[in-house]
Structures are given as C-alpha cells and as structure tokens.
Image (cartoon, rainbow over all chains, first blue to last red; front, side, top):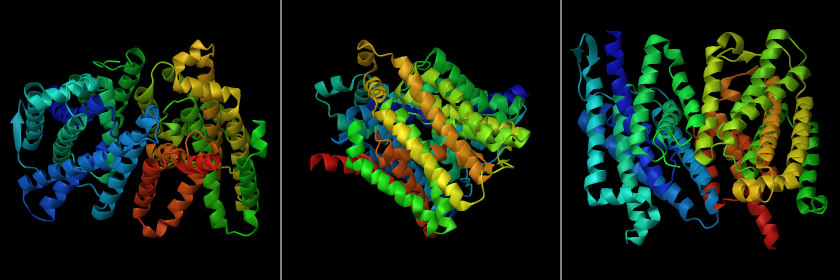
Length: 291
Length: 308
C-alpha cells in the first residue's frame, strides 16, 4: 500500500524533475551555459499561468499556454540580454566567461524573482489544474492532476527525443552538443542552433513550471531551490547528458519521496545531497557524463 | 611589492581608512551600524576573491565557511559560556577545518563541478542547522548571550580595524610570489605544475587562508548581532551577495571586493524607501556592471590609470 503510494507519487515528482532538468542540460551540452535563472523562468511561467487563469479568467488551457509563452519570452530575453553579450564580449577573457555567465544569469534570476514578488507578492500560488478529481489506483487515492502531470512530462520528453533524433534541426542540435566547431565547419550557423536550443529550453521550462504550479504550487521563494535541484540533477546525471539527467531525475525524485514517506519530510533533501557528494568523489563526471 | 607603498592605490586606500576611522566622531549610530556590517561583509568578499581571483576556484558556497565559523563560535558561547575571544578563535579554527574539507573535492574536480560541490556544502549545512535545532536554534536562530561591546563606535572601530588588517594581509599575499603561483595554477594547473610548483600545497594554503578570514569575520559578525541565523550567515542568498560584491568591485583585486561589499550594503540601505524593488535595482546595477564593466569598479579605475 505504502509502497504503491511511493511508487506513484515518486513517479510524478521524478517526471517533473526530469522535464525541468532536460532543457537545462541541453543548453549546457550545446553552448556550455549553466543558466542559473532556470528557477526564475519556471516560476515566471507558473505565476503567469496563475495570473491569466485567476485574475484575467481566460480559462485553464489558455492560462497554461500563456505560462509557456511567458517562459519562452523570458528564455529568449535571458539569451539575448545576458548570455549572448557575455559570450560576445571582448573585454571578458575566454576562460572567465563561465563565471560571468553564472553571475549574470544569477543576477537576472534574482531580478525576475523580485519583479514577481513586487507585482504578485510572495504568497504561494497554485495554478488551477486542467483536470480535477481523484482516482483510485491499486488502493491509492491519486489526484487525476498527478497522473496528468506524469503523462504530459513523459509525452513532452518523448517528443523532444523525436525532435532531436528524427528531424534535421534536432540533429544539428545534437551535433552541436558533440562538437560545436565541427558543426560550423559543415556550414551551419551556430547562433541559429543556440536560438533553437533556447526556444526548446523555454518551452520545456515553461511546461515544467506550469505543471509544477498545478501540482505543488509555487512562490517567488521557490526560485532558488528549483535552480539548485535542477543543477544537482544535471550534475548527478553528467553535465550535458540528457539521458543521464533523466535517470538522475528519477533517482533524486524517488530518493526524496522515500525519505519523506519513511523517515520524515523534514529530511527530504538530505539523502539526495549526500548521494551527490558521494558521486562527486567517486565519479566526478556524473553518471553518464563525458569529461 | 615595494612599489605598492608609493603607488596611488596605497595613498588612496590609506586616506580612505583614515577618513573612515574619524566617522564615529560625527555620524549617527545608525550609519555606523550599517558600515560595521558592511566591513565584515567586505572581509567575506576579499576572502572569496582570494580563492576565485587567484586560485581560480569558483566557490559558490562562501557561506559554508562563514556559517561554520559563525555557528561554532555562537554555539560554544551559548552552550558553555566560554569567553567571547576564545569562541571567536575556535570559530575561525573550525572554519579552517571546513576549508580543508572543501579543498578535498577542489583538488579532484574543476569548474562547475567544484562550484556545485560548494553549493551542496551550503545546503547540507543549512539542513543540519535545521535538523539539530536544539543545538543551533534551527530556523529561529541562535541566541548568543555575550557581545564584544555594545558601544556602536567601538564596534565600528573593531570592524574597520579588522577589515584593514585582513585587507593588508590578503592583498599582500595576493601580490607575493605565493599569489603569483596561485594565479598561475588557477589559469593553467598543468603548466604551473610543470614549472615545478607544488599546486596542491598552494591551493590548500589558499583555502586555509580564505577559510580563516571568512570564519573569523563570521564569528565577529554574530557577536556583533548577538544572534546567528541561517538567513544572515548561511543562506545561499548571502553567498550570492558575497560573490556579487567581489565581481562588482573587481575580481582579482582583493581590495575591490571590499569596496563592492560596502557599495552593495550601503546601496541596499539607500534604496530601502523603494521597498521590495531595492533588491531588484541592486541586482540590475550589478548586472549592468558585469555586462559593461567586467573589470568591476577597481578594475575599471586601475586600467584607466594604467592607460594614462
């Protein structure tokens, strides 16, 4: 009974983590950028969906679409206003660009967070779920919304897989993540690939944000923890490895759920952090990472 | 190094310290209190800059070192009632041990991986403080019975003196041969090693020094506040402020980091009337500096001087 409950709850949370981390790792793989405004973009999507549905009364479906659109716009703004200027800057030495991108996106994330807090307060917001009600699975009362979340996450990840492996654009993205210079030698414009990747990222982060808003609710305080959890999942799986982050998302998601159910919700994040430290010592490149 | 004592930077710093030392004679206690905190923050930022600017280690968890020092000092005072100075010293020592723990992964992994390890260290510390709430005061904070002094002027002078001495030591170290070796090993560890320098030894030294000053400053800060809480000395947001200070003031300058910290704290206070937008404005200014003056305040000033 409890085992089933852990299995079901853990799956929904893990799928959500996976979706959030996939875009994050894709950007790192292709352009070497660790986007620390990740949490802020997810929260922006959720709050936009909440505001559209609850204040403007556009309905849950339109609200969710608006949320994803806001995430897409914010992702592009992050790329064009923060990441690209740093990458193109001649005054920043190449070996320090990494820390500048980290600092820049971090500050950008704080700016988004503060704007959200200013206009929509710090209160937690729960986006109206698209499907309501409860069903009984193997004796576990499960909200339909939780099942919906898991299904959407899996569908989106499957679509992403198709996009990356079966379309021309996707293959270019894949190639860029393996060898950026090789791609430019083949006559593909790297900047265009970056734009595609940031678009994919924006949509993924948006969907993950809106679903998170429906499932657990968000507030501007969730920005930091969301970025941190995406960051640790991605490092655990191996930076730049999409399949690695999928596995890591499920490891972390289930570890947290098991701890919350069997030990105490207060200790929820500790085992995952310990695991991360252990992996860091034994296998610094992560589960499936390349060095 | 000998050139420093005749350089313009030396005279400007000396003049600033002298002017700052006279402040308690004519400004209010409120301003002094603000600057006291800013000076301790300046030491955090300088210690961070030694690790990042020179050893090339991206430490996302400056608050791990600060927090260990601050909480060790606070808990010893709270539990055993030992004298303030002994507690501060032991806090700094605990922080050095924390620095060694942090240095172990740094010698194995680099770049973002090390950055994450340090971030995880902060999250772990935060979790343990909450879990062992009986000892640490948990989320409410730890009450510290003793204070160094309640005189605002004296507190201010202690902070100023502490920052000046720390700045002198850290700056001197960064300009010494050790600093140069550190810089070399940060930029190209393989080549620096091939030249016969013991990188491991130098990096460990950098971690120890950085941890010592972070911990000392953290311990002094909690004895000034009379309380230690996650929000003031451990939270990731505090660490972010330390990093932003150092980048804002000019990385690899040590002294610039202190300037950046003072600017950040004073600017935050000036913007208080704007309410919740204060953090937004400070972050936006910091982002603009990062984008357009990547050398920071001191970096921009120094390069202008070098050009003329």
